[in-house]
Length: 196
Image (cartoon, one colour):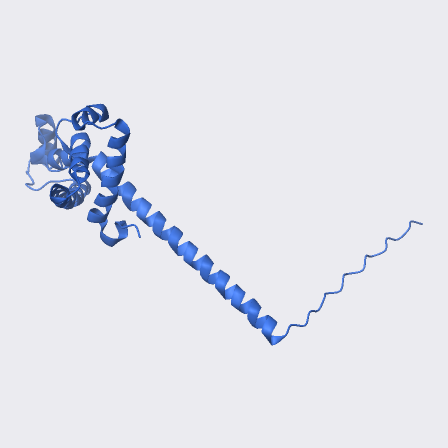
């Protein structure tokens, strides 16, 4: 017959005897490490939130013209449509009874929400402009001009054009944008947009 395998002996648990002083030291170290870990997690979450707000500020500014155009040119009522065929079709679908307020609610809701946000953005851009104009540092005024030229003016300028106009490098244009976005995040989102 085959040889039966011997079962390995289970290692016996090692017992340690801790004095009250040793136990208190271990607890104190564990608490300290727990607090450090908690603070690190809070810092990470705060930086992540701030980064998200800065990115949202960039998105609002990068797409400023598009959002403004959407608010001004959206069609959500039949009366807003310039398409005579569509207007006639809607009248036929409504049994030749013209419903005066026929509108697409989902589009209207998006336009209203976007318009409200853009009104806030415009108000905060005005605050930013005034702060930059009153600042003792001429770089602050330049930062507003950079943002305005790249993203707000009806006719956008290139980074190179702005660099030439301001007598700065293209790298400085990008740095000015990033600093402006950090300040705009605070204006757009309040305390949540601030870096501590």
